[in-house]
Length: 196
Image 1 (cartoon, rainbow, N blue to C red):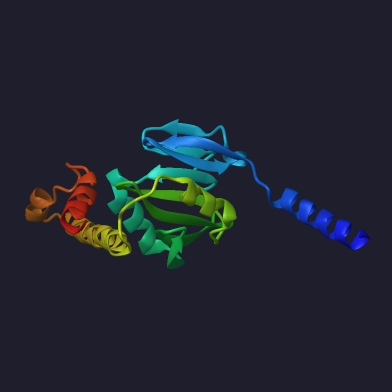
Image 2: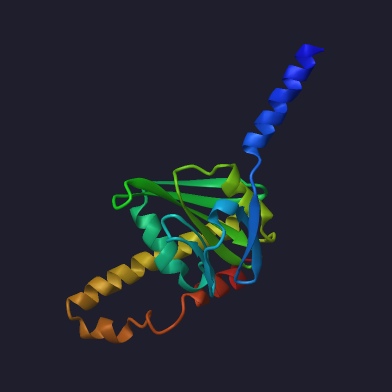
């Protein structure tokens, strides 16, 4: 009998240690359950930030997916396709010398948008998985999601190339390089309409 009580006590203690409190935040019309230690951050259009982007943030990156995903993918130390719950995800890790720590960027589809969770660390732990799993579902297939990210990276590379030509004072390129005059949002809409 004492052994049973001891075993049950251990399970209760372990459960208390791993139990985590969650708060709900809304980003671009979607509710996410986040660890309470990140509660009381700042919400604004399309993002929720606790302290800064290196500490914790949830971003809807539709309007700037080319510069966000494309830029981070280019400089990441590691990238990994994975599944969290039933969702395709892309996990990027970048060493940040200013905080002397790794910062992770986890991209995933939610409804008809792409979101990114930014946080310190280099793994996708249970708390981060819970954020993804608690979000509204998406009907975006793995192929569509990864294809959209590939298009964003290609477009980032193309823009960098055009910018280097513009830096060389190419009058033709500067007149035709119009990428700053319209939203990257068009890439997400175009890709989903043509590949969904």
